[in-house]
Image (cartoon, rainbow, N blue to C red; front, top):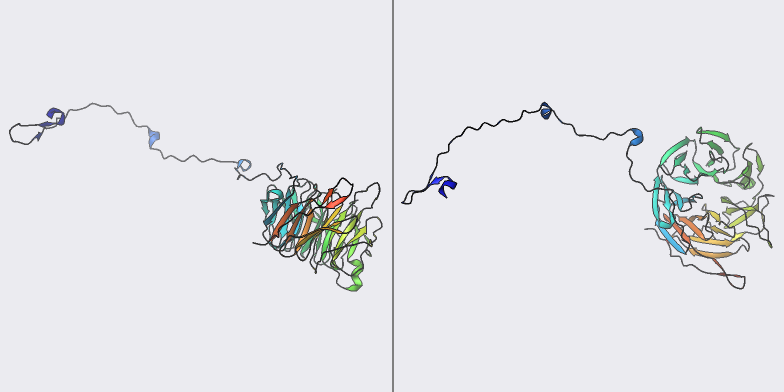
Length: 405
């Protein structure tokens, strides 16, 4: 045991002593060092070309999504007071909202999910329009610019800088690159997105342009502007030729009220009661007026039941033409029957002014609304239920009040 521990022990009284170490020379040959071992090493870095740069994982905007078929409702908070809402006709689950903030928000309406925020302006956005193919979004702002944005990539395709605030937009269904824009001075211009320049300037109207809409033939368009004085009331609503810029008619609406919204619709013809195409005018006189598109003559029947109080409210036809919805100064969504001109649905939705309403492009009983309480709502409801006696009865869908948070 002592030999293993390196000590010698004396059994008498002396303590153990450590044995002297014996140095034995060892002939060990070490390998020669490589010169590359002493060179400084660099960390391997991945290098990508401009086309191969990795992108952040962003959810696909135009993916296939289901549309609900049962009554449902949803409300979500926007980034500011809502001025305009637009459904995407090619991708009908997407809803775009414009507010008093610089960003345009795109929502998956039935999922209540924010998909994109397009921030390409520096001031409040007054109006927005989807392109014909549904992939680009046009917006006009108080910063005196019009922008064309690729919604999928969130990239500005082209932009136009004007001299006045733009307040209204309209897209041509046949010419996807031509956009009509109206400003606060009553001017209407045709903007070509390919060249980025103004292709044509139309004659000045009487006041600020509130709304622009194309006729079903797409060869003429309608403008509604502010009535600044009683003598210019006949110029509040005018019809223009799109190609030549000539003023076709201006004595359509002479009642002295400003029309804030134009909705062109074609009522579905039935065998018993055929009705001609017409367009609706949202008036500041607390009613919706209708005008024939063939004779450009004001109809006698009007839609009463909501109040505007000077706000620029919207109106919207549903996909079948049987219903027309309107906003309300008290926060209600009011729906009328286009055949009887009576109110069939009225419910408080917003805690404040309900500025804009828009029926779904494919679902006849789905309507979206936006208010100045920074809230956006989408409701899928049933108003008419056909009974066995070949008549219609009303079914009420309870909608809770949407309050700002």
